[in-house]
Structures are given as C-alpha cells and as structure tokens.
Amino acid sequence: MISIIVPVYNAEKHLDKCLRSIIAQTYKEIEIIIVNDGSTDDSSIIIERYCSIDNRIKVITQKNSGLSAARNNGLEFVTKEYVMFVDSDDFIEENTCEQLSKYIEKDKSDVYIFGLYYDYGNKKDIGSQNLQYKKYDDGKKYMEISLGEGNFRTFAHSKMFKNNLLEADTFTHSERIRFVNGLLYEDMLFIVQVFCKAKSVSVVPEYFYHYVQHYSGRITVQYKKQDLDVLTFIGMLNNNYYKTGEINNFIYAVLVFRWVSSCLIYKYIKRYFFSKQAREMINTVIKNESFREAVRLCTTENGIPKRDIYLTKLLNINQFMYKIIVFSLVLVKRFL
Image (cartoon, rainbow, N blue to C red; front, top):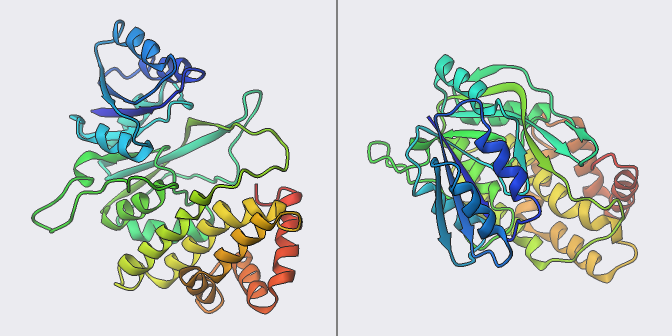
C-alpha cells in the first residue's frame, strides 16, 4: 500500500538509523526505494547490507544530480498506492505506516499530513504545530486555513501522497507533479502543485517523522547564492498560480511572505549589521517584485494573521526599523 523513497547522498553517518526505522515498520506491506545519488562515502556499503536482509528494498543508482532528481527518479519506480519521502539523515517511528494505513482505510484522501519532531539528538520539539484530525474536501482550502492557523509547512516529508495524484491525467489535462531539478528549496513549488490538485486532504494528529537538526547554536551564516533560488520559486508561483487565479490573494500573500522570511530574511538578518554579503542578500530580497507584491497584499487583504500584517506594514513604512525589529526577534529566537 505504501512506497517509501529515500534519496541518499554521502549519508553514512545517519543512513543506518534511517533505514533501520523503515525496515522495522510494524506494517509490512511497503516497498522501500533507495536512490543512491552518486555517493562517494560508505553509503553504498550500508545500502548493500540492508538489501541483503530485506527483499522489499529496490536500489536505483544515479550519478550525482541532487535531491530533486533523486526524488523524481524514485517516483518512476513506485508501484504502491501511496508514496512518502524520508530523507537519509532523518527517521520515522516504527508504527508510522501502520497508523497511516488505518487512516487510508478510513477516508482514502489524496494527501495525508502528519506531525514531525524537530530532533536535536538529546531533545525533540514539535515547534508551533497544532494538529487536530480533520478531512478537507479541497487542497486549496486546506492551504488557506492552515496558513491562517500557522500550521502550513512546505516539507515534502511528513506527508503521504496518493501516487496517481502525482501523475498526469488526460481527463483533467493535468500534468504530472515533480520536483524542479537543480534548485534549492525544491519542496516549495511541489507542495503548492500538490494542494492545488488534491481533492481531499487529511490531517493526522500524530507525530511520526524525526526531522534531525544539525544545529551548532552559534550565530553564523554560510553565504550561499543558491539561497536566492527562493526568489525563482516565488516568481514561478506569481506567474503560474497567482496571476492565473489558481491560488487566491490570501494564499499568495502569506505563503510568499513566510517563505522568503524563513528561508532568507531570518537567516541573513543575523549578520546584516556586520556583513556586506548579508546586507546584499537582504536588500535583493526586499526589492524583489514578487515579494513586494506579497507584502502589499499582506497589508490590504482581509484575514491576514496579525504578525504578518505588523511586519509588512513596518517594512513599508521604514525598512531600517523593520530590520532592527526582525534582528532583535531572531536573536531571542522568536522566529527560530
């Protein structure tokens, strides 16, 4: 009933724990698709060892092409009704598939969303997640409600998808849904496409996924020009979903403002007053037309969450004060 795709690239430190958590599932009707994305460490040896003890494992080997390509490749080999992704440095609870199979029998939704732990090794945290069981009859309605409640997350993991939802449909003329190759933050557009197409979404109020955090605790920033891929995605969202009316003003405004804030602004604001590179990153973001449109909508649309209204109005009135306030909030971990 359930396929699990595990993309692997040089994951020898964490892969054993990841795969152990999957083969130990109490629900046995699963297939495990491991995509070895050109690993050069001992990941291949670990994969071979697990293949020798579990015949449910399929291994696809490709030259190093990135996470999106590995996930897309894995999707080509799925034979089960539902599919989920587990990153190779994360792991899942042993009853994950068993519990999800019960929800499948109950409501046969296109998408299932379940809770995740932010796992720091010696402690775990659920953050601001507030999950209650509910079935939505429209994916876009789920997006709107969950964005308003602060529960929407663009992770491809901690979700399960009906496989035929991701495939092309000649009756509705819908194209298949895949990750964009070669770009960072590949989950973002994929998840929006999924919810725009989904006819039913179920929220499961249980926490199955361990999202392992590799956090040093220091206020340091690794400058990556590829972080600006977020702006590419919001441009695609603007042109293909917002301007075409596929998503409404509320979804676009809140989604884009939070995407950009969490992936770029809150990250680089830590060094804004000390680094020319950080200032250039922040200023590039603030000038972006798609982001500015989201900021404008946050100050004019009804129902926008108060935090987003406050920050966007401040950004419009005084950019320097906005940067000071966000810098202070990030330092006290209000946005981490």
